[in-house]
Length: 162
Image (cartoon, rainbow, N blue to C red; front, side, top):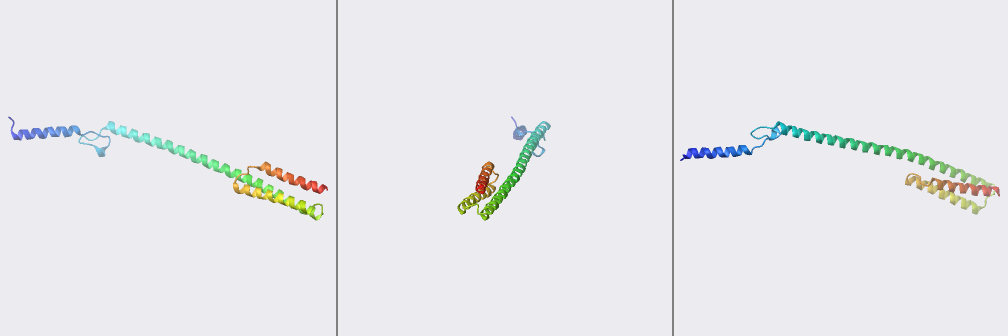
C-alpha cells in the first residue's frame, strides 16, 4: 500500500490538476489566469471595442445631422418671421394712412360722425388683429387682413364720392 506521505502527495497533485484545469485564458492581461492571456481572445476583445467605437461614431454623425437640420429649420423660421413682421408693419402703415384719410374727410365735412365711428372701429379691429397675429407668431391670414383693409378703403372712397 501507499504510504501516508505518498497518499498526501497524490491528493495534492489531483487538487493542483483540478485547479489548473479550471483556469481559463482571457484576452485581458489584467484578468489572465495561471496561463497568461490568449491572443485570439485579445483580438476578439479588440474587435468588439472597434465595433462599439464604429457604432458610436455613426451615432455621433446621426446626432450631428439632426442638430444641423434643427439649426437650418430655426434659421428658416427666423427668416419667415422677419418676412411676416414686415407684412404686418406694412398693414399697420396702411391702417395709419386710412385713419389720416378718415380725419381729412371729417375736416371736409364729407363724413358723418356715425360713419367715422364705424370706420374707426373697423380700423381699430384691424390693428388689434395685426398686433395679436404678431404676438402669436407667423401671419396665417394675410389675405383676410388685406380684404378688411380693402373694404375700409372702399368705404372711405364711397363716402368721399358723396
